[in-house]
Length: 67
Image (cartoon, rainbow, N blue to C red; front, side, top):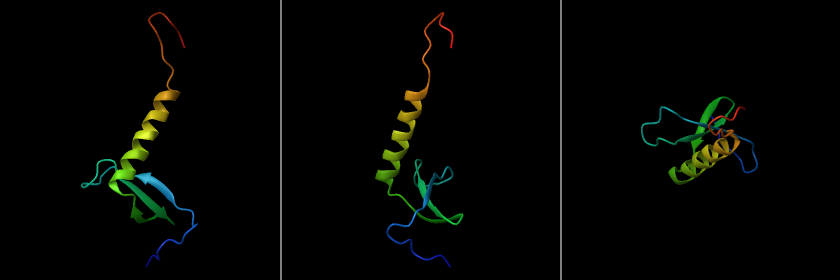
């Protein structure tokens, strides 16, 4: 049985693509086991900030420009 994560403990976060309740679900993982989820509000913020970061890293081409 998994214990409750302690304050200061390092957990991993990952998107949970097959979550029927929240399209943007982010799970908290400890030792390869899901121990919880971010609230819907925070999962959306994290997901949207991740997408915005990826968009900023994407090179933009104009017609005729090469990468």
